[in-house]
Image 1 (cartoon, helix red, strand yellow):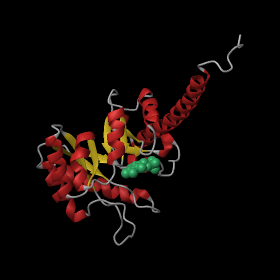
Image 2 (spheres, rainbow, N blue to C red; image 1 turned 135 degrees about the horizontal axis):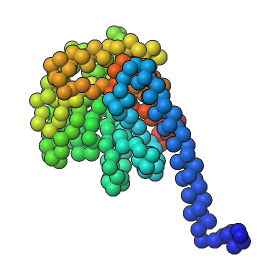
Image 3 (cartoon, rainbow, N blue to C red; image 1 turned 135 degrees about the vertical axis):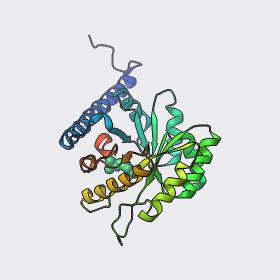
Length: 253
Ligand SMILES: *Cc1c(COP(=O)(O)O)cnc(C)c1O
């Protein structure tokens, strides 16, 4: 019996429910594909899947998507703007989520980043390291931090951010000396328009050197939707995946 359905009070909510179902199916399918890719890349590299964290980068996507993803087992979410991180973490405070900040940290906003992020991947100066430590102290939370290192080849234009080779020790020491920040490793973004493998190999070397002086700094955050297999082959422990899970990002408003 379907009589009397038309115009019934719940017709719009059931339409909304079917949109949600469609989105859930879409996210579930893409998430399964990404997890399969991670599995295959780990097997190929002889690595244990348990040593890899999938961080789903949800910048520009609504909290409804994060709720669906949380229900599909995702616990690690990445954002690159403070305001969006703050809004989402407040709205989703009922969920058990680990927040990753992957965007550039402005030093005047570092305290707030420390308030909302559990892991900051993008520490790129001594000053930011000190401000994060002060902010984490103020909000009485300990946070994990990675030194973002530049993987741009010498003389390349259009850099993708990060500390140059000769500045890494100084930022690492600034973090290691903090009481509320924990130095956990390094992060890198592969240069645009180049084979990412040599860049990720450089990152692995940088990581090895760092671990020799800071044994607990063994995390390597590397790899995005198009290249995380190359990053996993080079030892990445955290892959940051956006569009392969969520689809092409809507243009920024
Ligand atoms: C957006 C972003 C990602 C995810 O990029 P996709 O290509 O969508 O997977 C990863 N890392 C950083 C730093 C980002 O800003």
